[in-house]
Image (cartoon, rainbow, N blue to C red; front, top):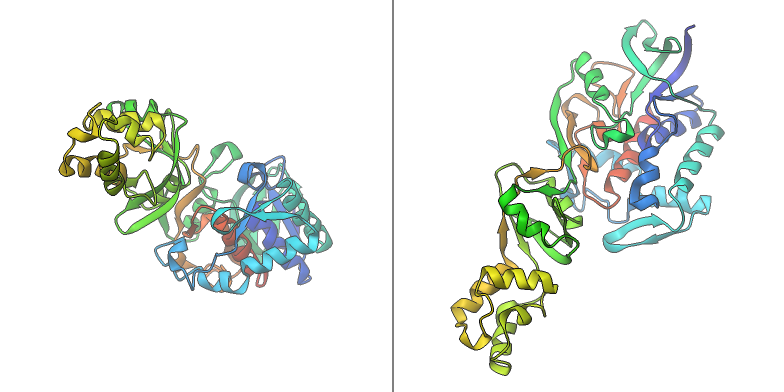
Length: 397
């Protein structure tokens, strides 16, 4: 049996729900469908279950590097019109307690479910409907807009919003559906790749890293001119932690990264002082003042072993300092879609309006959220893009 609505949103995630709320508040009849049994699963699992729902520093005008895209200016309009402060105001109006962690990241004090409940209540109050377990299929243009096949019958709409995300975290049901729809209507795709993802290494390189599994340090990780200063974690599979996830969006296969394992210290100068004051101190023990003991022992082993500081010249101390501050390492790859937090690339922004997210030349067709070639830094930026792009489409759909 066929049905009709003004606005059909495919995808009950952050962007889709935001768009549906805004369209409903404009008096539009809105229906949101999702193949999953529960809405907003990515919100539910984010931030360790507390949802890192935005970042107070999200501002591409002031900091253009926060969002990666072939056209970095595309995201500016939506993010400028619906800001982090705007979403925070909704959270505060709802009475959701939250706190700031490092670098402007905002988390719920309680559960991510509070954000989901807020969105679902707002959707109901706006008159929107939500149907779960509905699998979208073939889409056709009609005289009145579009018709979307589903297992419960076709749904006709005058405006169609695709908010099905990228390929990241396939266990959440992610797929390439949005890309297939975009290609059908002639839009180009910037090749998607996993982003905000841990690095892996070939067997020979992995062995010393895996031996340090569980060790973490505050590090500066650099790739070319791009650098991030956050935590780094050694794992059984390679390198992870916020600094690694951040740089993974910039790294490409065959390239190296440079890691400062003792952020804010000057190992050479401090080792010179130690050499003068404690000349009999073994190198591994001296290095334990800069990095965790297991890491210190490994750096010592690959430089000058258990040599005493008295036996190390300035040149040798510089070599040790380089091993600490300029560790050059070439990842073999990344863990891939299974653990990637977001998707880099996606629907080419050249085919979309930056004001409304509507496909150029295809009135009534919108794409929002992660499926677009806009990828934020780790720490709430991608949720803010979901809110902002969803809001922008909701003003027009």
